[in-house]
Length: 380
Image (cartoon, rainbow, N blue to C red):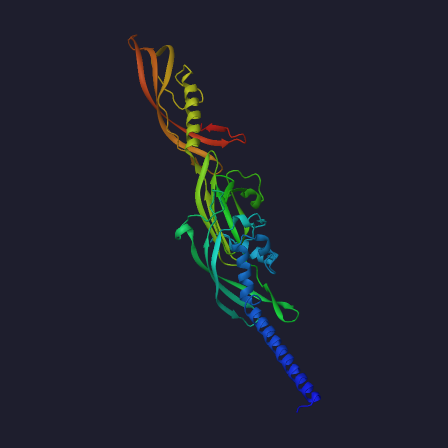
């Protein structure tokens, strides 16, 4: 028979063993969780994926809070100098706008996965990530992916390489990370023949980024953008328009360029045609052989009897072209008819002459006034 004391001792031993095993399992589970976290969420690759997921969710505020995202002055100088066209001095642009660091201009990012990771001699981790990228539409205002080149809905596959480094640890166990160089990029946007461009339903004045409010016929501005990002830029107003131009930034700390070239709309051409026709009609009201300030005229050696009359038989067809600082129209042909009664100086005979008089007219300047009206200056 087992004594009660001996039985109690054995039960106590079993309890100790059970608690020890449970404790060991807890420690093993905790270690497994820590290892899993270090390999995923708290890994260098997980840090980069978290940044990209913020962009995919159009959460610009969260993306900007990742350590190391905000560029230093030296990085800004390097990026803006890198955006300069080939063959130029490559000096840094003094103004950099943050207007495009917003969620509603971000396109579609999906299929994010790390494809490669390496570590350099300075302990920095270089994380290469693959993803699919599609832009936001330029002028629709829908905020949806555009339909530019590169497949359905403008989706294009890209890879980007980010550089990160350790930034301490949480409780001495889980590593923290920061970008060792900014993942942002510079988009250098040039607007020709206008001063605004459209993006995802927004209209932006490029003169703000350029730091020159006096420019009306074009300017170039630098914008900080997220990398990766893709945008469709355009331009539209009552008188001018431009087709969508895709700007894609995939290299962290790099740059991209886009040129939005505004062209006259049919409505613009019609309005100029109306004003030019009205100007020529005014010329016909001058009952002289050489109407003042007008493109047509004729010399007659015989004596003019009465008042000459003019009519326009063919109005010049307006073709608006860009000049250095405004819209112009090159010399364009038209015809007028001169009706005049003359007396021959040779024999004194009197006759009615109807002459077709060709002429050309050019417009030196077509200025769009703040109220939308047009101020036209005909070349002398």
